[in-house]
Amino acid sequence: MNLMQGISVLPLQTTCQVTTDTSPSDCGACWGHLKIHGLWTNHQQLMHIKQLEMLAIIKVFKVYWNLIERKTVQLVMDNTTVMYYVNKQGGTHLAPLLRITLTLWHWCIAHQNQAPLKLRQSGSAAGGLATDIKLAASTPCSLSQQRNTSGLLKLRTGYLELSWNSVALEEWTVPQEVLLNCIAFAGTSCLAAPVRAAMLILTGTSKLQLLEGVLRKSLPLTLPVYGTVMHINRGNPARSEVLVDSWPEFKAILTRPQQEVVKDKGDYYANLHAAFYHDVDACRALLENADAIDWGRALQIQGLQDGLYEITKEKAVASHAQLKPYCYVPLMHPDPSALPQSRLRNDHLRFGVLNPSHASFLNEAWDFGRNHRSLRYLESLIRLFPSACLVDKEERVVSWSLSDPFGCISHGYTLPQYRGQGCVGAALQRIGGKLHSRGFPLYVGVLAENQPSLQSLKKQGFHILPGTYYMLIVTPSLTLEN
Image 1 (cartoon, rainbow, N blue to C red):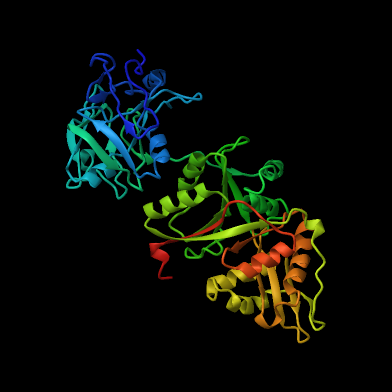
Image 2: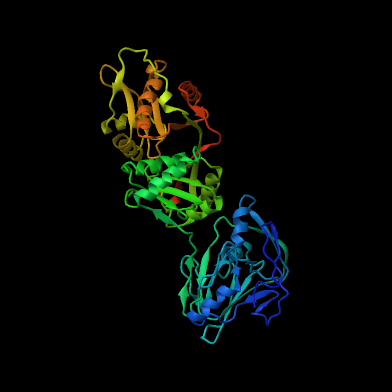
């Protein structure tokens, strides 16, 4: 029998009520709880689970993600099942191992015995345990009294029974950090493993060149990711890499440093990420994948989509990390070949060449710098990426402009006594020519309150783009003191 028969499909709405009129004899599904009998006593029998065309609880996270802004989800539980059933979609099937995602741990902790959950794992022909455990704030334990620091449950063969005491129209606050545990029943004892979204590290010249062309079609939203991929395809000076949720059709993409590049756990200057998505849920899944981002390290994420900020904010709260969002006005030049010729109004100034020895001077002028990590970062920018500067007759640097691993023009600055003499335009013309000759778009992010820079860029032909350029700095609590 198809287990979906007689069970209402979970709608994507705030109030969710799941009912069933299936009798207990029909594959064990009954009012108030679900029993999946011992179909998994061996690997061959596990294959029959695919025929049930059912996903338990996992798809409820579609509701969770969609409602994250509202922070609450209403569940009607009048001695009703806590399992949720969703028809398979898009060819999705259950794997030979039945996977059940549990949110129960945090729910019970949040509600402190108001409605303790009873989790029963009964014995089967294969010889499982028969133990009743109440999961609540006062008893955060697991079957067999075996629990590790992540709160994972260890189950043996048998069937799983989940039931909830009578609760009428409780409004449950969705926790920011939900424990996603996947329990696999394979006929032997196994430890639950976190559910992780698909992730591919994209390698190979042909794939990366194809990706560059695909990202170009979605400019300007792809700008930071596009710039990173362009650098990768032109020698990869920053030793970056690209992650996608799937290939060749992808819904989310993330760039990051290769794992061995950033050795300092507190260095968010160097630990640079950029993201772009077609599907915000796919982006959320990718960023929450521990293999994609190590949220225990200080990091920086940049992008031009509002969803990226929301996802990062959620994850920072869940990780007890500090988030500092910087919101910039994005500007882009429509035709870099048409940058106006800027004429210097000081005969004592000329173009010079930046080298890493200048980094300490630039670091002192940078409001977001003035520390050893920012100094190291500026040294790497000068060494690896196009830059421009003007020097006076004593060869002292008076105006400069850098570019970064995202291909973004950054760190433009002119000493106060040299402002109003055409320095900004001259530096932009020089660095713009270098970037344009390599095929890069010319773009920059400027804080909204920095009106002089905005006006100067407009005079150079830059257009303000719609939306916001996000620079999101995440600092875990363990690295705050460092």
